[in-house]
Amino acid sequence: MVERRTYSFDGSFSWADIKIPLTVDRKGYKYDASIRNFTVSENGQTIYTGADQKGGLFSARWDYSAFNENRIFEISYTLFGAIGGGADFDEFYWQVIGDSWDVKTDKVEVLVTFPSTIAKNQVYAFAHGPTNGKYDFVSDNSVLFQIENLPANQFVETRLVFP
Image (cartoon, rainbow, N blue to C red; front, side):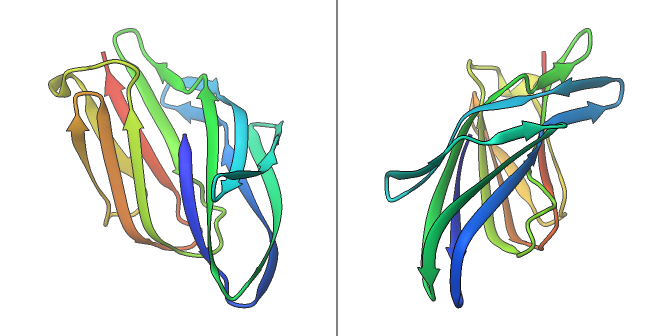
């Protein structure tokens, strides 16, 4: 996963954090994902590596110095164990933005790419959260989810069901 977050600072700020729920519990199945290779970078420079995973929650905090400016942080990690499902289907159901962000997000774009090609007519895509979002297949192995003006404390989930 790669997430680019643009922060618009009004005043002086020195740290940011992220919390990612790792437990997925959906209609008859439950799994615990894990995150590895977590990094935060800015302008190609790594400013943080590591993290803490406890009780189904991943959390990280990084430090910087900002004053009345925009900064873009790239948050990158590898997600393991995030596929669940039933006897005749697999499902990727992931909360890409949790409900603990206390400021609104102007624009969200999430590109989910499958490791192999799956015909579009065999994949079902869903989005959960605000109703102003949209999604579309951009190739036989990618779905793009987009949302504008995401309110503070509002989650966004992507769901893909495939054979």
